Image 1 (cartoon, rainbow, N blue to C red):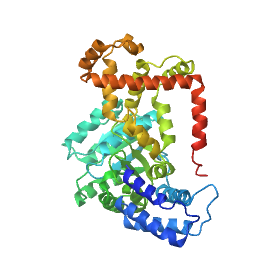
Image 2 (cartoon, one colour):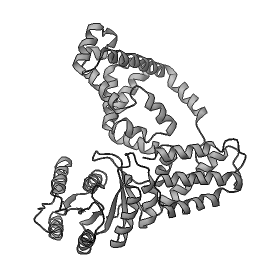
Image 3 (cartoon, rainbow, N blue to C red):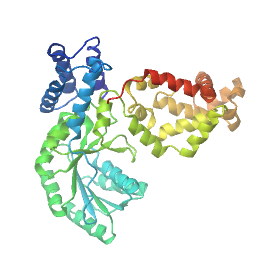
Length: 451
């Protein structure tokens, strides 16, 4: 999401190489470049001005710690200022109310409100162990009613009945009565959106807010909307008593400005970030981690948490014991790893959380893109169990059969096997003490922590 902004900031820091300290003279040009990078990323102008002033106050005349370069010192200041701008008031979802706690979602059409409603419901069900009832009041778009109903069935979450012939307020009040009868912990209300703000839409959502008195009113905004997101945020902030923001489509090709602007424009904290299309692709907003991603440092902590949730621990331990004992890593093992990559949202989702340098290297690896991962899975699935366990036995005729079965070329089979043999050698080396040597080598190259 922040690729262009990260690249611009990296070039800014590169320009400070060799400087002994940060002065008025060398910082003015640097901050001008930072300002341009933020504006190009669609950050609202008042936010840019406040941000630059905050950075300048901290860095001019700053003595550089002997272990830091001026570039590293500037990155630390920018990181801290990003955390401050995005992070004021960040908190968990507030459900401290007489059940059912009512959460109202508002925003423009296409921002992802319906999907976000299902994601938050799943989050509450799996992480908070809450009993959730979903309802859509979007009678102008009948597909929204059907979409939410299907998502509810898919996730095993109850959805209150709604008909396009009913009034939104009646649908919401009936859902509230059902939530009370059914002793639900939370009622999540998805509202209608438009392609642009209009008074009719605002009147409708205001009527719902007054009648339901929700404990949370969340503004759902598309990360890729740029300045449109900022304008919509102003309109909704004026019409509703917003309590928080949900940033959607943060995995897309967005400039990232919405994340920096919406917090200040609405005056409300970002609570969640949508990071993909899958129902579990929702993260609690962590400003320090988002700042690290903007600066190309990655978000390894979120990656670790995702792996902990989604990777089969028993399988991982079994593979680790196998590697440690020096036994051959085979194609069955590789297939399991590729399927886990798919389960976690694919290589793009994983690389988005890696530091920029590691992500660039990962992108050059044989499994560095989605199509290649799927192709390799197809190839391995076209092999017999014996071929997967003993790939050295795969001769020319077997390769032709595998290529035919997977819809690929023999050259691709050869490439996969060649890359696999290199991986197998690396795994064997790790099993013979190579992992310890590799970690000691990496430790000597690791940059100093933020401190």
